[in-house]
Image 1: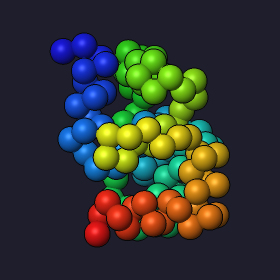
Image 2: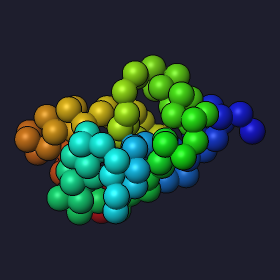
Image 3: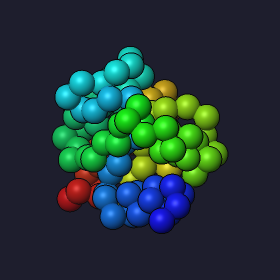
Image 4: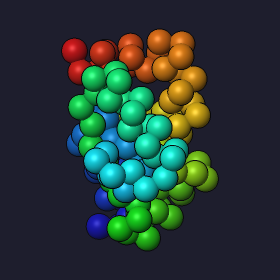
Amino acid sequence: MSIQEKIKQQVTENTIVLYMKGNSELPMCGFSARAVNLLKSCGAKFMTVDVLKDEAIRQGIKVFSNWPTIPQLYVKGEFIGGSDIMAEMYEAGELQQLVKDVQG
């Protein structure tokens, strides 16, 4: 299985996936911590993928999304954005609604 196939499988088999540095218990950068906090404040149940543990995933996710930075949020297989976009969506109430829509 190629890295692109592996990423596609991760984002399609899990409702909410956050590609980040570290994990939800121990984020390894401020942007990843911000993304985790935003999701937690929405009550989201989400999977994290630590890009620091796998260089192929770290580079592959940037190609997969055509987005140069990490963290990256996927909901139901769709790329949503990084921590800045997540914060804008949260301020507008859109992130909370998105989480509610996909998790009931």
